[in-house]
Image 1 (cartoon, rainbow, N blue to C red):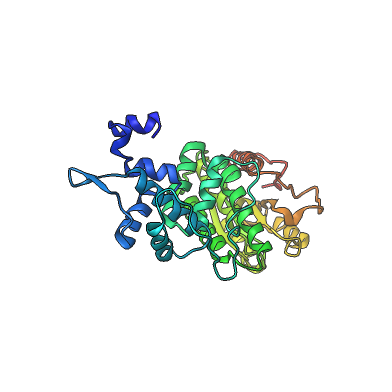
Image 2: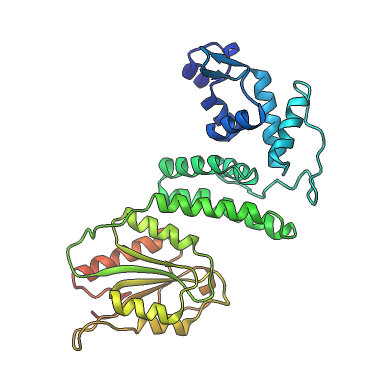
Length: 336
């Protein structure tokens, strides 16, 4: 037990760890520890005053084995049985999950923030409570932009690479992680009251037809909410006709078109959206159109800027929206 844990518990090391201290040490959530205790009988040997849990070194060893096994793809019930039967201090037995090697759970993270490793371990264990807790903590600690770029994206990429190199295994890990990242982004976004008085419409965010990867524009939507810029999120694979109809109905300050794959990126579509008008004759407006995602790489168009990062997109949209609200023509926007 380190100094911080002694300070938190107010007890000497032999009294055991609190549930919170043990959860941080293992990289799981307290909810997961309580669930394992309730379902599989892996609980603390000491319960101070009949209520407060204190985890002894033997308890910690069992939980460490449990975590190693579940991270290797072992079902939790079987992992609990093996962990409880293992001699104190002994390494868990070799385990071959059907179709997986013992090293299958190792994700190619590289040089990343420590939070990525905890997030990856929770994803491989399919530990939803830990994913929720760690994603929320990353946003609170670093802010949404840094949490997205330096915690969420590297972990998502690592899971994607593992999926691609493992014969379509780890699909469930990628889906669970993506779902919880999406949920974290939505929880930390909020509808924005326009911060600038004026008549500018919202920012439309949409994936181009055929494009299903919407997480990056969900991150942009949440970050724009932090800056109090109004948005309309249309998500994945928006048909061309629907994009045009939305532009005419909303009169947006800007439209962001996301294309993850080169096969979905269509410059003719982007030019069509940029040329879509709304309003009364003689006072028509057109939106600024920004191209987001790697699908647009190598397809430059002077009138269709392509931000290089989430921060670049935020700064560009900030300027476009402010200029539109003040009735000023922005370089990225057609005449209003």
